[in-house]
Each structure stands twice: as C-alpha cells, then as structure tokens.
Image (cartoon, rainbow over all chains, first blue to last red; front, side, top):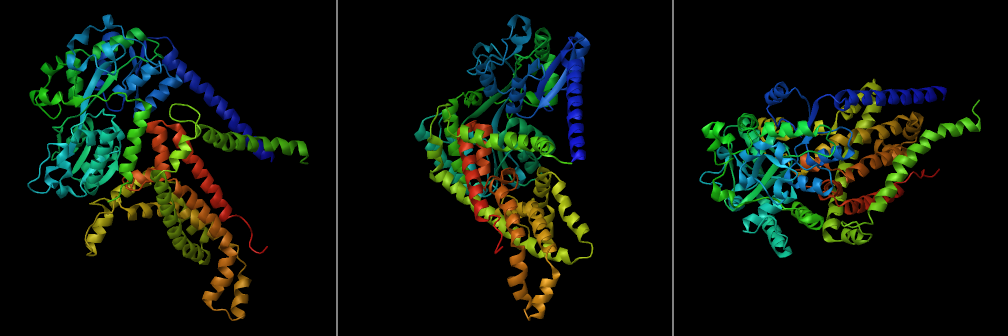
Length: 358
Length: 267
C-alpha cells in the first residue's frame, strides 16, 4: 500500500512538472510578445518556401500548425490555449464561427491585394461583404474515375451517368450527408440547398436505386482505394481528385454537368489573435498574384486570384476540370447554412440511404 | 498497521475515479438525451428511437454483435483448451495477447491492404484456384476483422478458467467411465462457464457499439448504433439524439450483464 501511495505521488509530481513545462513552452512560443505569427492551416496546404520568404521580407517569425478537420480546428480555437493569428476554415465553418463570435473583422484597408481576387468568389452568402473572411482556395465536388477500369463504351459526364447498371459495385461515395444528398438533388435538377421535404424524399428514393452500384461509403481512404484501383469511380472533392491524379496518371476528374457544389477555404483572423497587424500582412502577402501563383502550383487546388492565373502554366489554367468554363460555374452552388433542423433531416435521410441494402 | 483512516484515504482515488469517469458521464448522457436539437427539454428523442430506422439499426447491431461473439467463442474455447495443454503456456498466451497492443486503426488499415482487390488474401485465393473476389466491404470481412480484434479478450478468461480446473476432477470422471465428450459436457464446460460468461461480456458489449470498422472495413454497408452515435455527435451535432442512443446502449448492456450475470452455479 505504501508503494501504491508513493507511485500515486510520483504521478502527481510528474503531472505538475509537465504542466509547468507546457506553460513555459507556450510562453516561449506564442506569448513572448516578440514579432511572431501563428498560422493554423490544413496539412500540406501551402508552399513552405513562401513561409520563409514572408519571414525574410517582414522579419516576422511564423509558427505554423496544421489541422485535419474544420471541427477540430474550431474546438482548438474555442479553447484558446494557443493564440492563433490566422486560420483557414471552410465556408460553412466561417459562418458558424461568426455565429459563435470567434472571428475578428478584417480591415480591408490593410489588404490592398484583395483587388486581385475574382469578384465571382467575393461577397458570397456565407460572409456578405467579406467582413470576416477572404477565399484562399476553392474547388468542387465531382466524379473521379479511372477510364482503364470502366466497361468499354461507357463514359461519365453527369451525375445521372452513375446510375448506369454497368457500373455495378464500382462506385465509392464520400461519407458526407450534404455531398451525397446534394448529388441526389442535383441529379433530379433540384438545388443542393433544397429543403422541401418532398424533394428530399425524391432524392433519397433515387439514391436508393444507386445502391447496387455502390461499393462503399468511405472517408479519406477513398484516395488510397482509388490509387490502388480498388474501384473505378469515386464521388469526392476536386482537391482529393488532384492528389489521386498525381499518384495515378490514368485517373480523370469531371464536374457533373447538372451542377454541383462549390466550396471555399478562407483566411480568417480568430479572436485569439495576438498579432492582428502581422495577420493582415500575411493574408495580403498570400494574395499577391505571384505568390498565389507559386502557391497554387504547389498545392494544385484552384485559386480565386484571377491575376495569379497570368503567372501560372497555361495547361494548368486551361484545365477545365479545375477551372470550369463560366457556363458550368454558373451551375455550381455554395452550401448554405440550412440550420440545425434541416441539417439533422439531411443526416437522417443519409442514414436511411446507408442502411438500405441491395 | 492498516487502520480505518488510512484505508479510507486509499479509497479516495478509487471513489474519485468512479464518480468523475463513470457516474458523472452516465448522468450527463442521460441529461443530454432529454434535449431536442433546438436545446428545448423534450422526449422527442425517445420517440424517434422507436421509429423503424433506429429499431432496424438496433437489430442489425445485435445480429453482428451476436455473430462476432459466437464465432469468437467457437474459436477461442478450443484454442484456450489447447493452450492449457502446451508446455510453455505463458509464452503462447503472450503471443496471442501481443497483437492487441497494436492500435486498432493501424490493424484496420492493414486489413484494407490484405483484403483489397490486389491484396494478399486475393493472391492466395487466385493461387489455390478459387479466383479472386471482393472481400473488402463485405459482411464477411467485417465479421472476420472484428473477431480478429476481439479474440484475445475471449481467450484470456476462458484460459484462466481452464487453467484453474483441478485435473483430479478429470481423472475422477475418467475413472468413473465417462467418455471424452461426456467429461467435457458434464465436467469441464460447467466448471469453466464463468470464464465463458465473462468472455462473452467483454466481446459482446464493445461489439455492439463498434464504429470505425463499419466504415473502414465494411464501407458503411454495416450500420450499427455506434455509427449513429458518432454521426450525431460529430456531424449533425444533435447531441440529444446521440445521447438517447447511448442511453439505450447502456440499458441494453445492463440487461445483458444481468442475463449473463455473475451468479455462481449451484454454489
């Protein structure tokens, strides 16, 4: 028993020492008041060379941290343990963070490079007037497919093509209620922000008919599975598509002609920011056309910076898979915040679709 | 030397643990289950649970948990029996336990590779002439991987029960003319039933709420209550409904514990 007590005491002491050390470390990193900037971004989502360049040009030291989901990012910012100065949430999360009062307003006078952004991607419903956010990259939801694995004579240009019985057990769907219900709605010609129960029911019935073609409903594993040629077709984000195509050159990507989702990842300045001035400097730097061009070449998502396109290789800019022609762009929609109630209903229907067996 | 005061002192960590990490969470889950998605107090979640979607989900969770437990038991009992007969039983036991030290997700990802269209399993099927077939994202692979993950937890209690069995009882049975099968049915099995029961509890209850495997190995073709809870908490953020499902899971577990209870046979 004495030993037990001693062990208990040791654990308590070690814990206290660790807490003190964490505080020290935090102090030496973020809170020291030196000219540092903490950037919180998705993994592998910036050309690291640009970070060094920004540090050289401005003398500001960047502390760079990464996250892998919007929800995880929001939780960490809410906790406020680290003073993040710039973060890059997706559009629906920007809206949510504004609702939760987690963001500072941007000072547009400190962001002259804003003028280089394409007006099509400004002043959108999730952040009217871009008071809190500016787009970093954008993309679509579409169909990734491997032509070498498709049955002869079939091709894919639209959502409705997926219902072709020849694709039996060949399709991987992304595990997201908005994405898949949106696909059902789009295939019927409805908006992917539709909340009419009759339309949603119709979409569900249509999705159920797709079940024989569905191999699995997966998350990030779809990249691995497509690279390994486990399936011929996957429904997913254009960003993932670019990654998959990089690894396996046979694979192609198409934005369905019925229309689809348009998504954005955006610069924001969280309330936790300690160095608001440097945050603006950083955002402005990243919106410089040459910098944005270099970054886009590295990341290979689509840039909202229209001046940057002039500095990028032509084959990249003219790739309609990632920079769709204007008539198709018009059919793309941004997810609107449908409210908790509707979101729950979407999820309920998605659950019913998942449970439907062949 | 241990007077009552110090003994109570030693109770403090245990009591704190139980209150903070067992009782408090259960009450929180119960508390949240009474709020609808708008944050109003209501019983709507309980009403929703009794709709076909969730009832069917409960049934399918039960079915898969049953399959996983039954197959684990069928494999584990003979294995545990053989283990008690081997020379270096502790070593063999260790070898069975070691895989459970590896992270579950890591094992799941390994199985994605093994069961894949061009994976080791299909290469083998090709080689023995059966030909390759889809293994990943089937009921078979889901049950197989779950059994693989849970089996050490089934073997251990059964092994302990068998190991504690007094061999003179077996000799007595033999002396009195019992056949091998009768000895097993009338002597060995009844005396190790407690090990079997705790094995079943340790496997069945977690199997009921499996969730990552349903996506990684079964490609969401198998939906369990665990999957639904995960979705309600992380995606819908409908904590009320998620908690309600959790409440039912807890109730089912208590019921199950009661049924397979720790009553000693004929004591």
